[in-house]
Each structure stands twice: as C-alpha cells, then as structure tokens.
Image 1 (cartoon, rainbow, N blue to C red):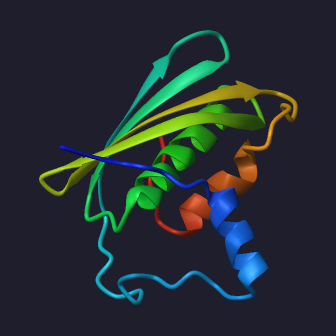
Image 2 (cartoon, helix red, strand yellow):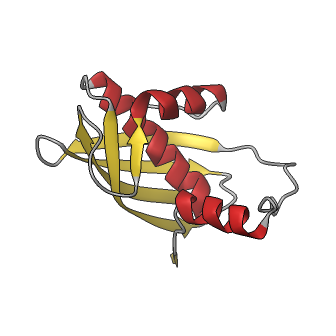
Image 3 (cartoon, one colour):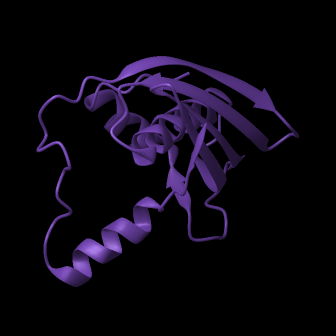
Amino acid sequence: MRRVALISPMTLAFAGAVSGCEMPDPNGGAGFSPDYRGVETRLLDNDLVSFQVSMGGARNAEDVSRYAECAAAQYTLIRGYGFARHLRTNVEEAGGIWSGDAVYTISPALPQGLKTIDAEVVAADCAENGIPMV
C-alpha cells in the first residue's frame, strides 16, 4: 500500500498564479476515465463529517481529494447548510484502487479558516464535471 501526500487545491492554484502558467496534466488530458466506486459518509459529531471515497483510474491524489470534496459539498446542502471547511484528507493507493478519508465541518455560515468551500458552487462544478456526489 502506498501513502500519497496531498497538496491542497489552494496551494496548486497559488503556484500556478505565481508562475504565470497552468499546471500541466501528466496525461495530457487524454485517457482519464475515472471509476467512482462510492462514498461512505460518517457523521462524527453534529457538524463534523467523515467521507470515505474509493475510485479507480485516478491520475493522482488530487482526483481522490476532489471526489471527497464533491461528496462533502452535496452532503452539506442535504443537511441544509451552505458551507464546509476542509480539515484533512488522507489518500492511499493499492493495486490501482485509490481510497480517501476526508473530514469536513459543515455550517450554515462561512466558517473561519483557509480551506472553506461554498457548497452550492462546488456541487454545481462537480455536476458539470461529472463527479458523482452523495
């Protein structure tokens, strides 16, 4: 089993902005055919939620993290909230199957912190990009 370090989307966006160019797709955009294998949601506390995701065909840990973020966005909306804050995501890969364990807090108002998401905006983006949600 291989453990993969995850770089946050904000870090990647900042790096791209600073360098003045976009990050290249290691596959050249071709051949990406993700196999989304499901999401398991665990309510840890009133506003603390864990998302266990599994997928094949991921290009890297970021694909797995994005899948978990999509699940978190939809779950946040289902619970009647508008925002979530990312706490952590652990990603592992074994035999071509990637798994992610992400934890988010959900809230009706924009929480403090750097890794916040507007659930409605993220869910719409996920739907547009064909990433399944809860």
